[in-house]
Length: 135
Length: 170
Picture 1 (tube, chains in turn orange, green):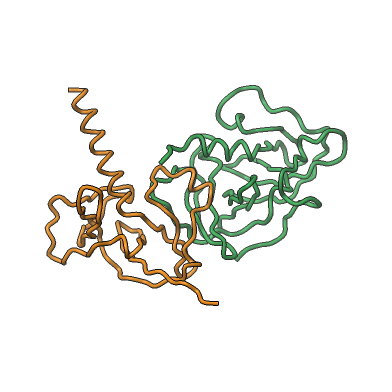
Picture 2 (cartoon, rainbow over the protein chains, first blue to last red):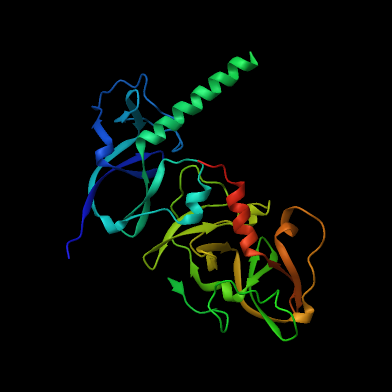
């Protein structure tokens, strides 16, 4: 019986490590990247130092997610990509957490980066609209 | 790491209401301590007690869901009932224990300050919960007394339902 594998990109925001499907990532911004216009604060929090950027294809064009470090790509067995426990799936305020990658027996949140960025952009747009209404 | 046992006698842990069952005899409860208070679940709902390993915090999770962890190859959500009941968080340390409970159809790890284990209480000693609404009493299905004092029996399905309804949908 053959066991399928998947490639995931590991990255760090703040003190925490996250994973994303490699296919969701267009490229990693170079070390001297321009942070202007990058998405820094998301449901993951804000990076300490925003040393790297992950370029993600989003509806409306590419967006750059600022992260502290890109840790590399890991190949994991598909069996180690798990859905969220049902209670967690129902309680999270973000749809960007699609599951968990089990790495060295520890669950690592697996993210849909496009959804993460879209949620942040929607939140900003809503905040701007509310601000206009208050003004 | 894990500690098997502390399991209620008899029935598998799904859909059994030892507390609500009419008549005499004993109700089997599973006692825990939360922030100094004594609480219990219906024992058949509890499958085992584990020491919590390192938790993975999930982004955008409510405070009452401090994280997830793997146990016997399964990923379980950890529920902090104290925060759900409007109290402060239960500190999670290497020695912190959780009761793994079945709450149809889910398995959830309920974190506790301390685990008392099985407690047998005469059914006739179970009293109705206080009528006051909100806070802890919202989740108490009965009050029991034993030689150690008063024990609030938590309605676990109601706790889980509250967790779902209080969360902001994605």
